[in-house]
Length: 132
Length: 137
Length: 220
Image (tube, rainbow over the protein chains, first blue to last red):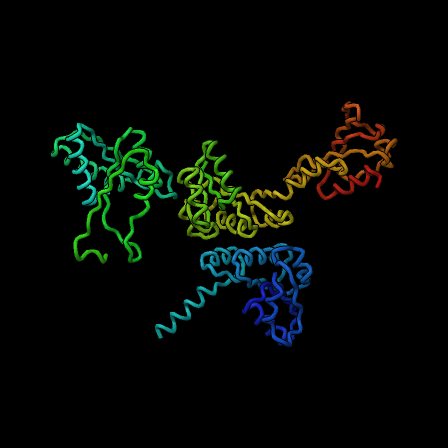
């Protein structure tokens, strides 16, 4: 599977490294080359400098042939915009998007975006631990 | 807003007005949330405002001075008070405030600083001390 | 009209000022506390502090009863989200987004934003009108038809000088509606009208064929 990941933070870098190790064709995008230091030393995919909210950068990352796109930058709005471009302009079959703000996540989920909120997930986890 | 401080402030104003042969306007401002048009009629708030102003009138009557009342609707209290004072040609704004806490700290709120900063007439602030034992709320 | 503006920077501030002058009810949402204070001091209490992309903020400012929401922050993605939240959560009848990157125009359209304004594009259009070396100028874009009204100048040395209209290979669905000669004589062109250096032509063409039209008129 060809996967494009936008944002090489802790989550993006770990996901890129894991998917690469599992034999997938991974391209990871970030606007700072310093972020790529987080990738596993044996990462065999492509690391590209670029902004995932710009069509040109996405094309360079091979979005037209991608099977999946994951948006995990720190900015909710950037993730939302890039995910929508990939879903509606490039028709990528699987698009996943991180949105910290639970209310925005809810809205975009109802609009058909595969969005999850780490805030909600972590709160649930902590609550379960506390009430255990 | 109809607190004890307001009542004390009105008595103070009435006393000053009597001595100087002045006139008192009691102003009650209803803050209207942005979700509603500013002229929206919020029955509950209007009733409360009218009740407070009626009470002020009875106090004025008791002291024996002339009083007029005004029920205003605005987004923010501060600008409403300052503008009203200008419109009425008031020589003095007298405000009563109670001891308030926000996030556990004493706060003066934003109305008083706004009026101090922007009023074009004299301003007197009457501050009501908090009864002992209630300061934690 | 009740108009909500997201972003109290220079654009948001002057926009709010102009709309207030026109008698509209205006509210500005701005993240920076000092900027909020400045706007409230200048324009009266018309600005609240908040993030215009957050549902809670938009609920607080009464987006539900807004006739129009305009997002003019410096960030395209923030403007997109503010407009989408306003549209889908609060049924704002009309949304306008400011764009910095002109290539986002098509994306925003596709994602349901009613109007986009790109200052970059506006400046570019102005440059094209001012600088005579550009032989094609956009006059008007007919949005729902996807047609463009353009102004083309026949440059000296162009290989189409001396040719008649019927000798040109114009792109399909394109009409030359007016030819204005160097001597300022406008006329409706016919098949036998001969092109002269300095002629100015007003034409209607599908937006995607504008380059083909320019090429067929300049002979290049």
